[in-house]
Amino acid sequence: MRLLIVGTLEGHITAAGQIAMQRGAKVSHVPDVDGGMRILREGQGADLVMVDVRQSVARLVKQMKQERINTPVVACGVQSDPDTAVAAIKAGAKEYIPLPPDAELIAAVLAAVAEEDNSVIFSDPIMAGTLKLADQIAPSDASVLVTGESGTGKEVLARYLHGKSRRANEKFVSVNCAAIPDNLLESELFGHEKGAFTGAVARRIGKFEEANGGTLLLDEISEMDIRLQAKLLRAIQEREIDRLGGSQPVKVDIRLIATSNRDLEKHVADGNFREDLYFRLNVFNLQIPALRQRPGDIKVLAEHFAKKYNEANGLAPRKLNAEAIARLESHHWRGNVRELENTMHRAVLLANGPEISIEAIMLTGEGMAPAAPPMPPITARPEPSGQPASAPPAQAPAQPAQAAAASGAAVDETGGKLVGKTVAAVERGLIIDTLSHCLGNRTHAANILGISIRTLRNKLKQYGDEGYQVPAPGEVDRASV
Ligand SMILES: Nc1ncnc2c1ncn2[C@@H]1O[C@H](COP(=O)(O)OP(=O)(O)OP(=O)(O)O)[C@@H](O)[C@H]1O
Ligand SMILES: [Mg+2]
Image 1: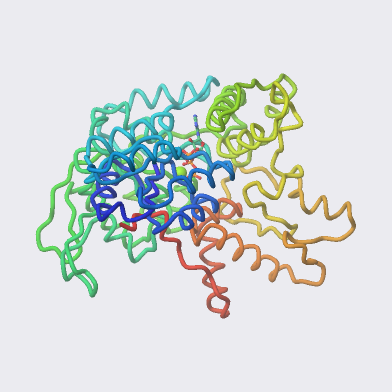
Image 2: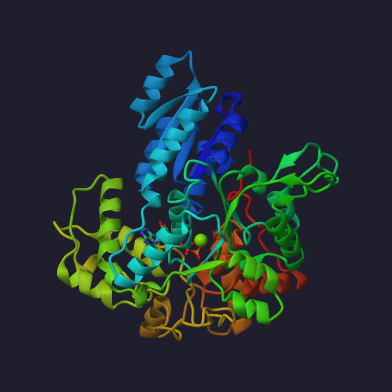
């Protein structure tokens, strides 16, 4: 759950953000409507927008509608102001939350929005087997390692486990180990005491303590620095953590779930991941098969996403026709369920008949419109070293290259000629552009580029060393309240 707060919530932003974070939401904040639109547009996304009524709610809602961004908007304002509440609802806000914020009310709004996120849609017997195993292990407190290619639904499954566990009514806190710079991750996980380092002006409670009694998801654990792995191991073994600069260990009671889209055993063999930590985390391993390995899921997922995006866009319910389904079932789905979801989102917007037909299905690598999620535009795709072993050999080349071949000249997205440039220069341009597009978010950029985060980091370090300007890690993914 990602919450975007627009405006200062009349001075209650910290309280509202904290409540949302305690409920497991990722919170980002922008001062105004334009900032909010920027985030919504550029793919950082949000599941819910909370807007200060003193901002122009009408303009935000109108703009979002115009750009077909269908995130629910709730307005927040001080209680004594019913007229503003009415105006906000008329402007298109789904709810009005009175300030100061009430924890239960915010929790209810978040839960209503998040409800759908927790459902795991499946029909293939292979996935049924995975879920059966998940049901069996959910009630225990044992650590679970969820593995699978990018976009297979690891986070969805982690939330499912939590929802089926004895801790279901407690918090689910998630930390993306790849999105947070190494030097900040320790404090993020374990917290710090006032004065622990220059700038530590107050005690900060880390995610372990925040998740106390509930479940802690360590997302993309393979990216954790090896020194921090030692501290994590201790926390798991001793069931206590040390805040940075703290003198007393703090007891914590959490259920740990970790995810990785990389082969952790190989990581261990390469000396990048501690073997003892691997065994601690891997009490149970839930391996989510790639979508291409569970073709029976494609139709139900496609129908689920078609319904979701039809509703979200206020369109009449439309079914996929048989030809469209057959096309979906024959695709390779390198980006797994996430790619299918994006494809269906596009299909719903493109379809203009009473049903969704094959014309509306634009698959990656087949002449996708530029408005779609950014595509590597060229032939100079860096071959990732950390690609999952089961990844297919490079598929049909990305479509702009095909289009360019047809017209006789390779061009990049901005229309500039590629011929005459070195592969290294094109690769650098692609990587830096993609990263800026992702507001500096390394995880998203690596996913889009189809390379591992480590490869991306190494490239960025090299570019930085060579004097190129590299976008700083985005802060929008993390709480900024
Ligand atoms: N079985 C499923 N049912 C419904 N939605 C799903 C399912 N699996 C995945 N999704 C959706 O697909 C998208 C990707 O899922 P998720 O974020 O859990 O994948 P992931 O494996 O964690 O990806 P990454 O490795 O990139 O972090 C999400 O929008 C999620 O809601
Ligand atoms: Mg994930």
